[in-house]
Image (cartoon, rainbow, N blue to C red; front, side):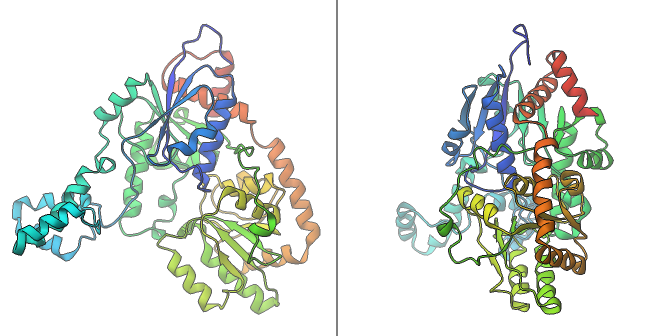
Amino acid sequence: MKSESQKCITVAIDSQISAKASGGTETALLSLLLALGASKIRDRFVLLGLKGYDHELAPFMGANMDMIVWPASYRWYDPATERGVGMKPRWHSLQSLLGPLGGIVPILYRYYAFNTPLTPKAQRLAKRLGPMKFMVAPAYRLYRGVRDEAARPMVAARADKILKSKGVSVVHFPYPLHFETSLPYVYEPWGLPHHHQPECFRPGEAEWMDELFGRGCRKASMVVTATRWVKQDIIAKYGIAPERIAVIPRMPRFDHADRFMDRAEALAGLPESFALFPSATWVTKNHIRLIRAIAKLRDEHGVSLNLVCTGRTNTPESHKIETEIERHKLAGQVRFLGVVPVERLNTLFKSAKFLVHPSIFEGLGLPLLEAFHNGLPVLASTAACIPEVVGNAALLFDPYDEADITRVLLEAVRNPEMLDDLRIKGTHRIEYGFPSPDKIANMFDTIYRQAAKVPLNDDQKALLDEMLR
């Protein structure tokens, strides 16, 4: 793609993930690393690994890649640590007591290491202090929180120093979280669910996300989305110029995921026939309406459909989902397996009757593509970019209408010929609807070079025009 005379650049790719997690972000990033590593691109890449998990990236690295452990990690919105919202009463009392100096209390609260056990040394100190020993625990936990390297803000000067020492000239943030840097960067927000469904988030969370996504998009040299639907959404919401937003349809590299668990082991305790929904239990994934539709299918049509769900369950929505399952007496039909190894997830994809994906918001919806790859028929919602992603290869339903979800589930159960047709269409969608891994690698490299303001050759200029159309 590049002539020998072109200047090579070094790109830092923020890779603070666990490669063993089966989420969409992880799958997309690992697929990109594999594509870049297998390409003939002459530019270099430095992966910014997550402390304690960086070794998991080794199998996904090519000869054109190096890795460093990034000395600060991210934290998602937490009402208890954002601007003092959710502080415990004692902290509010302390804030009032300090009067004009009370503004420091929310900052201290942010760094306070709750429930951290005292070390033997701290315990011995508490014994020596006698009546004043009550001061040791809060002082020690505050010390630990401030001392923790991951809790230190990653200010631009600190980040730039590390990146420039590695010769980095452009940074890629493949998810909404990002740190401050004065270097040009490429930003992937994936989608704006907080804009469309603010009611689905905790108090203050949608506003926090809006600030995070908006800042990332506005400061980015280039923004990348997987669909044109999301591109138009970003233009409308944040006023980003269209020529700064590239559309790269993301087709995951599945060679790292074509590993399977023994079927008997993977399906132990599961019913012989089941539908699959692999997604974390966020509100926008719409588990509750799907559960109600399964109950209607049983109660109104006499059809018992088993559902197997995978993905994170440590979300604010999980308790509501459990309550809904109990209310409809579906414990025997709906099972949550939590985060599973990729080998087991692949075996589930190969073993399920069909995939049902009722999400009310997606920036892409990687499980849909994984289903196509595995020959699994797809039932999906009409929300957001999903129709653009699946084309004619899925049976669609209104995700807000439980009766419509029930209708589609009933059709899937009673019409195996339709499922066979969807299976064929899904395979065609994979083959003809998305760029090859090598092309995806060259697309991203073109965007990196565009962000770094280095010359593009004729092939790269043509790719850029394609991505900006």
